[in-house]
Amino acid sequence: QVTLRESGPALVKPTQTLTLTCTFSGFSLSTYGMSVTWIRQSPGKALEWLARVDWEDDKYYRTSLKTRLTISKDRSKKQVVLIMTNVDPVDTGTYYCARGTSGYVYDYMDVWGKGTTVTVSS
Amino acid sequence: DIQLTQSPSFLSASVGDRVTITCRASQGMSKYLAWYQHKPGTPPKLLIYDASTLQTGVPARFSGRGSGTEFTLTISSLQPEDFATYYCQQLISYPPFGPGTKVDVK
Image (cartoon, rainbow over all chains, first blue to last red; front, side):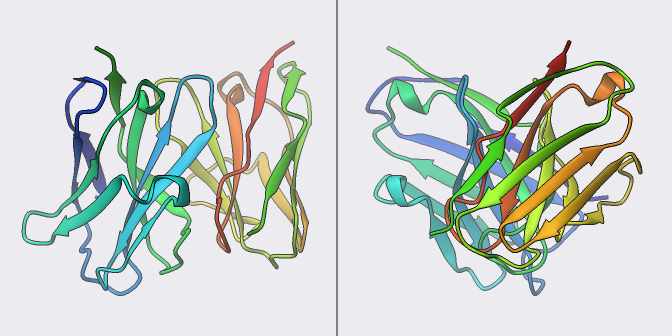
């Protein structure tokens, strides 16, 4: 059974760095075509694709956030970490990680974590 | 970049209604489009990929059609659990998600 679970702080202050962890099971991020993508939904807004790491350790970022995001994977721990620097209240939202399987950068995502809610406020 | 638009943005419907949502792409993208259902407090759920392939476990009342620049998601008979926001997503370029269509109770 494939599962993903997001974890991280519920509250961060503006200008701080946010670190989110996606812990997954039931698949290997070393297998051809596999990827993990971070997506968020801010209140009242649509889904936003943020970043992706794949089986070859290739990394892709949302253009507008590229300077603030870092994605990495720890294959042994079966985790993918997303770091967002210099957070702002507009970064408030629910953050999801999800699995892709066909190797495309903007892959279909067949299994999602339940999401973790982050509030940016002083 | 390929931009996705969805219509309508908001749709009021009743249980039993046939509902169709349209996703249009600014450039042709063959069949590389997916549909997701998103309910508050739950993660998005993949319904359809490659424009018309039903994801395993998704009820047959959901169907997808289209290719190139125009795609549709149809719910043949709306059920109470189908009230949600629906997003299309492309495989080809950034940004991948459409703006969403909220299906609400009439």
